[in-house]
Every structure is written in C-alpha cells, then in structure tokens.
Image (cartoon, rainbow, N blue to C red; front, side, top):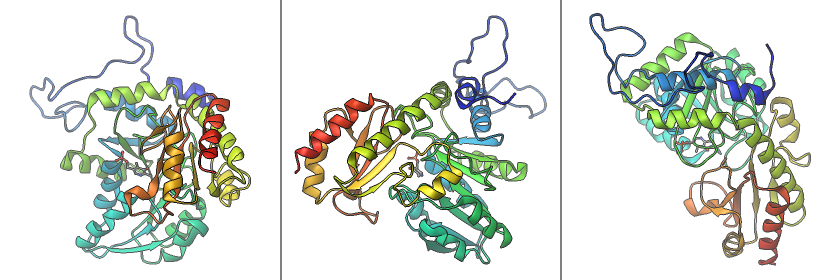
Length: 367
Ligand SMILES: *Cc1c(COP(=O)(O)O)cnc(C)c1O
C-alpha cells in the first residue's frame, strides 16, 4: 500500500502486531548472545549484529524508499565507511570542495593511502566534469554550510557513464526531503545526529544502498573497524523517527518564513526552498522538502556575535536539525570558505511568529 510520509514515518521498522509485545521493542543490551554449536545465525556477537539495529535499519530502509541500511556510531563513521572501504591505491575520488569540513579532511587520509583526490564545487554540477577514470564520486547536496545544490541525476548519469560509483551525503535533506537512491545514486549516506533524529541528544549515522554486494562490503567494514552504534542510541533514533514528517514540515515552513522575513535585511541569504534562491530550480526537481538550514551574512564578526547574543529562543550551538532552533557564526571553526559574519541558522519547531519575531528583534540590535 502506498502511504504518505507521516504514515510511513510512524510505522517504519515496527514489528507486526503480537499480543503482549510492545509497539517498539526496547533496546537490547548484549555483548554476546546464546550460541551453541555452529557459529552462525542473526545474532552472535555484539559488534556484528544487534536486534535494535536491525529494527532501526529496516525503518531507515523504508524511509529511503527500499534499501539495505547499515547504521554507524556517527555520521563520520558512515562517511568514512564508504570512502575508505571502496577506494584503493591509485583510485580517483571526486569530492566537493565545499562539503562538510570533516569529510574534506578525509582527503589527506585518502591521499596517504595512495588515492587521487579531485575537487570541484557543488554548484553548477561542476563535479560532473571530473568523473573520467574515477572510482567514486561524492556529492553533498544541499551542501553544508553553503547550501548549494547539484543535480543528482545529472551527475549520476555522467559518473555511471564513466564507470564510477556515486555516494550522496543526504544529511541536510533526510530521506523524506530527498531520496538519492531513487535519483540513481549507489549510496545514500547521512549523519543521523542531525535532522533525522532531531533532538540533539545522540550521534549516529547510516549508509543505504540497493546493491547487496555493496551493503555486504559496508557491513564488513563496520565489523572490522568496530564503528558500531550503541543500542540505546539506535532505539532513541528509532523512537524519534515517528515524528520525522511532523518535525520536517514545521521546520521547512519556519525556514521559509524566516528566509522571507530576512529578505532584503541581510546579505548572502540562502535557502533552497525559497523561490528567490539560486538553487531553487534544481532543488524543486529533486527535493520534496528543503530542510531546516538558512544561511546569511552579517556585516562583521562583531555584528554576528551581537546578533547571536541577542537571540532569546535560539540556542548558540553548532550542528543542525534539532527541535530547538540553533545558530552559530560558522567562521569560528575555520576551514569553511565563509565571511566572518556568516551565520548558519538551524530552524526548529517553535511557533513561526515567535521565531521570526525573535530573529527580527536581534537584527534590530545590530543596526
Ligand atoms: C554533521 C555532518 C556529518 C558528520 O556527522 P557526525 O554525526 O557529526 O559524525 C557529515 N556530513 C554532514 C553534511 C554533516 O552535517
């Protein structure tokens, strides 16, 4: 039965009705399982498999539109699982030069293992020009923190024609915002620390693929390096999925309202869901929801700090995707090509009028 996203999110990965069983079984804490005789079966040792992961992975697989999912202890554990398990000495990898900074930091690691890394910006599908002879093309769209968008299907077509695999970091959109596998990508990868779980209380990541051989390779990588999720985190994540559609709906509505309120008042305003955004035309072709991150630039570092300090409802913090709005001056970390006054704003699920009023009063403090 085809169902809507809210229905899908509520039921995803939940076991069928069984009398006296809970709707969602609690976390299974086990280092090992009873195992007599042959060393085989679904659950043997805690680094290989866990029933709480199994349910979460089924749930995320349903949200991804049908896929095998391997969950990890963090987003970076998932990102590095794809890059480091698929790339060998001499292989060419194409990375975006404006993607998440810790993903970019893997360049050095890949090169130290003898891979060749090529880089181009996300905007304008510039990576498509670098796919000749590549083994793996890594996309991140919308990109963090610049919010540029590339045409996934178009880059996939170019990459597949050149014999390369394509992985998409789908952290910002979540599978209810965009489904990279439906657009032809081989891997959909995400930090589930962010919007997918949305409460800012755990770290987790996942890799989704429809190719059983690739799924096996990723699962083997997890077992070998031991980057396994804790059962408690996996269970909390699964519980959080039930409200994913509700959270995303409110966050995208708030983000659009905020972008509209900021229009003309700040420079460099970006939100792919806004019809005025340079990414909008491509975004509407491949996204169903445009995420919760809005970015803009204030005149100086000092103005940005005063703006942040004047917000009453918005937590000053890094990360994004949480139920409570948060914001930061991204340049404080170094490593991203952003102005000193650049603000990455993560829109939460507060009442729209309250959030917009808070941001406007904080802007007045700096003008
Ligand atoms: C946060 C983030 C990651 C890394 O995720 P962690 O859970 O912090 O390890 C990877 N990609 C993107 C786009 C992110 O925003």
